[in-house]
Image 1 (tube, rainbow, N blue to C red):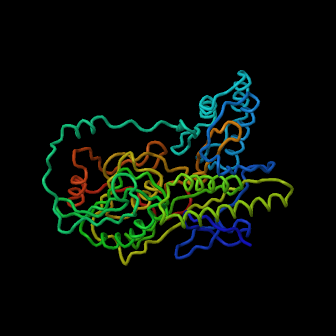
Image 2: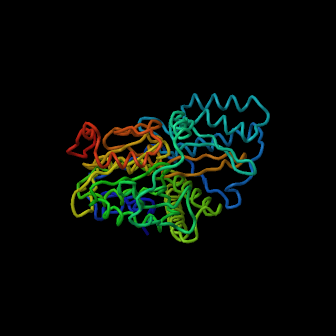
Image 3: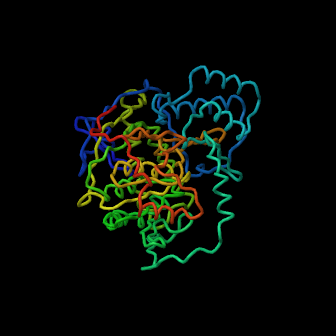
Length: 459
């Protein structure tokens, strides 16, 4: 039986791939396909291990361990990175043998290691400039150590907000706000909300792309079809930390009929990657983070990942208990817009440091659409490695969280940790109204144009 596929985003691949990896190699449906992706082993086969976390340990209490136990957990961490971490392009997914040897020496120098101390040591050994990579532990006093610190808030913007007048002119309300909400609110306000500026410009706030908000996000293509005919509109993405890229891509493709360069992608195919992603889904379900109406989608996704892990494990055992890692690479792909014609007006996408992951992936597409401006501040810079997997080291309970897919902006303008730079910087007291005014008039000297690409061929 072919392996079931991940439900996180549509696959773009070509024929001739092994049925063992068919979940990652579905035929292109309704999309223009890239050249055949390269599926190449990136690590020598290693003895097969299981990284599946028992249900009762997903957020279990960590414990102090001996030096010998800490050394074994270090080796398990190295295994997880080597066999599941996508890593940044051009960088090894795991530290050098010298770095591992130094960490081993440090662990032997002490008789016992508390969970927080071990998590910090692993952070120092494995950290990379990756906005998704994190270390820590669960329990009564959970710890999370990001591989890179969060960006500092802009003090001048905070000061402007403090000194801004409290009373604002009433907003024009030709129609009441349309709230496309799920029963459980995510963050501040509903996941999707359509309002208007004081000048009547439509303002669509998209606050998340999480699959937990699927009922609200399913309406995005219809909203895009409505907005694209307006002379001007704003898409407010501030604070959108990402989620399921499928919702973001569908929204972008509903704005235009033009062909767009898809993000380059490299996905890790291994038992460890599938089990780690399944751990992440099971943890969300166990925590109660998923609304009741979204649970069937998560349960289906989890079942697909666990079947994939089982299929890959069975094939590895059949080869003599070896667990190879392979990277599925797709570059130069094109996706065609699904709208009836080009974008008719001007769209301003309002962003800030809260826009990350799938939010930034959306920008990678819409920045190619004529008539789109990106305004506000730099985005967070956490897009390069996604599709999170979760691991718990069995002796200490220290946890690792990292991405199993690597992405690259097809225009080459994105930098991890720096993010996307806006076309127009906005830093006033009422950014929505500034963005709406910009949508009406355009940039003072005309919209800045990025270098046009006539081909999505690999650079």
